Amino acid sequence: MKIGAKILRVKSCSSTNDLAKELAISGEKEGTAVISDEQTKGRGMKGRSWYSAPKKGLYLSVILRPTHSNLSLLPLVAGLAVIDAVFDSVGIRVRLKWPNDLIWGKKKLGGILCEGGFLGNKVNYVILGIGLNMNHGRDDFPEEIRHQATSLKLITKEDMDENIILGNLWLALNHWYGQFLLGEGKKIVSIFKENSILPLGKEITVSTERGEVSGIYRGIDSQGGLILESRGERRTFFSAEIKTMKNNKKEE
Ligand code: BTN
Image (cartoon, rainbow, N blue to C red; front, side, top):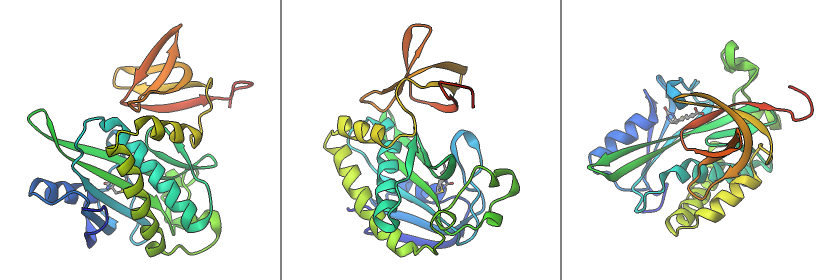
């Protein structure tokens, strides 16, 4: 089934990822999407909360049942789909920060949260959660994130029409997920890199489960992992977050 062909729309829920997960466990087909006007316990990466003001943002989760297991590419697939949908809807080029951030300037416009469920060692489902700040004014963000968050309305000074963005998002998600299913990992990674805020050779620090590692960014491998050269050795990270990026001439 095509992504977005079936949509469950709710006024409020704890997290669209949780609702989609329940549906996936009870057998709902691939492609079904859940959208909520607000989330009372929206989640971000690393257990952080995702602030989800009523009717200001897009809070969306899609059920996928991928037939191959290169799952680390899925946040990249979703990121590419969102930046294409935003470009087709409002004409601005949002950038990507590996693995899951949607960035405008130095501010965060949205994020992706992929969560999977397994049956034995086989992937049963993946929930692709997308949060996009659409119609937030500055005061709609809590004070502690105001300096680092932005919305499409703040960028374009225009009210966003969710239906237009959604229409383009379904097209883009079907396109990029189709590429994923066809095994076009190299193409996905290459276009992700073209749209990344991170230039090759940049000094960065990533935060991993085992602590922080600093090194030089050497690209993204065909599985979607971040390649870092640290102390002369190349290491690939799949579950990490870029903490700081050094301006190579002088510290930011
Ligand atoms: C991040 O940047 O840390 C990821 C944010 C993902 C937020 C979306 S909103 C829809 C879906 N439901 C959630 O609880 N989280 C994701």
